[in-house]
Image (tube, rainbow, N blue to C red; front, side, top):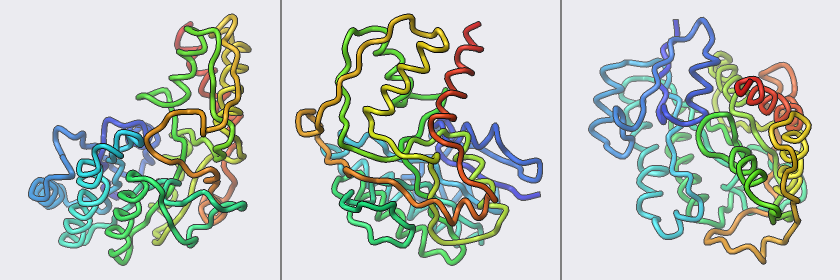
Length: 289
């Protein structure tokens, strides 16, 4: 049986990994209280004691705007933290699967970014994640898996925020000139396990199929919430350019990822983001019933 140690155990990706864990894998999820990846000594000790076959790094600093004012903290987690994990994996001959982001790209492309495309991050968050990738890829059998716009029924995310605001407010303004692909954490977890069992290495991408703007995504959330009776009359959603929305960090205007190499491993394409969203909202309705 393969033994997998998962960092960032309280996050939505780690929780999905535990729920979707294959029978052939023993998953051990470590929350920050038991494994702070910024602590080099602690990381080395835990991995040496647990002796996992693979470490799946889901721990990350993801507060994109706050990172502009907290670059040292973002770098400690997203860059040096990955270096600590990579060093411990090297010492114990463990594989490393590191979860990264579409923010390593500058958004100037007009076609989906392939895994080998040059990176050029435009924010502190993106730069620290890019640098963390370098530490992971220094290991011969490691995997960097980039994703985007992750959501689930767990933790804070765009879908949960929109559901709350659509109920509380009469009008919501959402940017319509940032284009990418949402990712349901459950599908991402399945892709991670497939990559692990396929015994591959290198850079891969995974998101739900399809493309949308944040405005498109918000409109779909409102539509599904009303269709399933979660919100009787959701707020109106108004498109705005990102230039009128005050944010500390720059975002890539286009961050669609090419997933073909991951789909080849899965033996299928991802489900479309609209189908995944509908499934999640249906599940939330069932939980409330």
